[in-house]
Image (tube, rainbow, N blue to C red; front, side, top):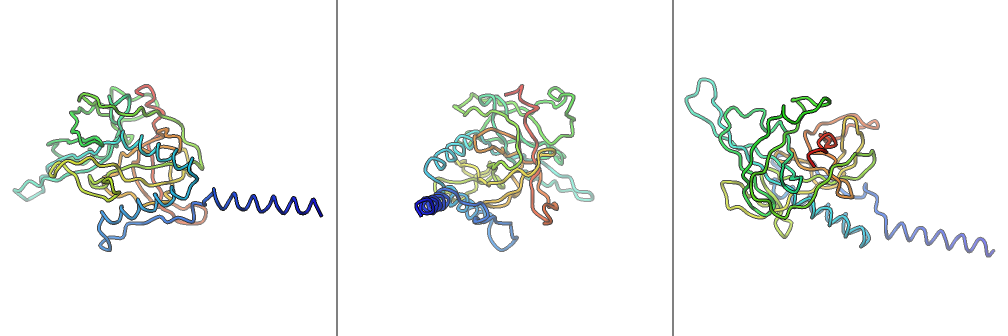
Length: 287
């Protein structure tokens, strides 16, 4: 009888421990963008609230660790706006447009890593505006890809390195690392150049508007493959235009890559949304 009582008491303790400290990811919601049903500002604001709900349900130590990782990585993010001109056939008018992206500062702010495809369809390169998380506009220069690729890379890989010529701020140190299947990761980005204000509301801040200090939007995902590197988003809002090039870090704050594309794939007998990631281990000499 005493043995049975001890076992039963132990079972209750285990159940209480699980109830209080562990929260399955599938209890939380992931939002897909539904065109015309909601503004992009409200869409990402709602997604950020889901991320906050997940973090708030963790134990206090885990909350502290994850928020430290998010704050540290956010301070290394930059907003990118490329102004370009198009010359449509049979039209005398020149069309000017803005292409938005995200990047991550590394090597104490000396360089910026972002996605190559932001530049692929720029017919005429008029201007590039890059702002850090504090609202400072950075003077930059794109590094020729041929000067940095190694034997395992090609000039068509979706990455580009930009030199930061501005006086460096107190940017955090970001270090590269390997990805492991099953790891939870945090994805950062500025949808259409927008970011989070101190109240976690999404606001616009582009080169055409008043420059503001805004944090990037965060989405939580899980690594489901490492070669190629693929992430399944699980909590928050889906990535939208302007978040390409955003950093992807694990729960320890290690940079494993940058976002390059989204696509639907067949996985475990289901069709799911995934994100392709350019890994950073091949750039470790720059860090």
